[in-house]
Image 1 (cartoon, each protein chain N blue to C red):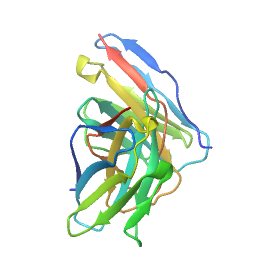
Image 2 (image 1 turned 120 degrees about the horizontal axis):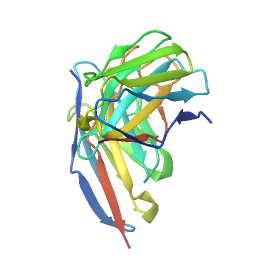
Image 3 (image 1 turned 90 degrees about the horizontal axis):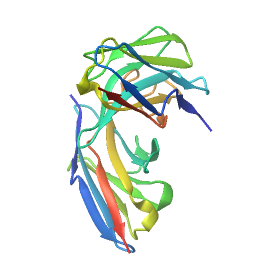
Image 4 (image 1 turned 30 degrees about the horizontal axis):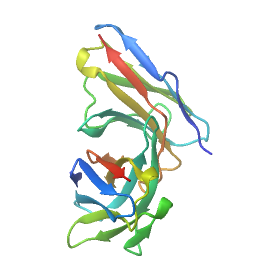
Length: 114
Length: 114
């Protein structure tokens, strides 16, 4: 069965600092991997996804993630944090079969201080 | 833009009541999903549907049922609400059958069971 582990339920950075949110997955087949973001009082929205091809994936708002099969990881990064990045971030995995659903991690809350 | 509409933002119900949570999407999406979101637990899949009148159990279906009579509407039913079902409920939809499809989320229904 597939699963997702997000290391660190809460990450705090200063404005302008590097953002690194960690995600490790478990899957018996090549996975599809996603990062979603939830701003306060809003639904989730897709930041980026990896399906096949290039392992470095760029998303919205300057975020990117790299699929590393050997490490079973899909960490999310942004070179310079902005106050508006404060939100909850969820990593998710799918086994890539039609008729299946995404499995989400427990989430990481990102705080950005000035 | 795709719109996923959940009928209520906040709902307060009594223990033992039958509760209906409604979700409607306006873009002819094939797949629809119900998740519940709890602090520290992330999103957990309750049920999903990949076609009208079809349903699949997710990770935590106990105490819930669903109905999908029309393509655009997916209802979550709590047959006899209990206090441990107090949670944020999120509905989502995706266009096709592929597991790499982007999910579109509603804003959520915060259900309190007293």
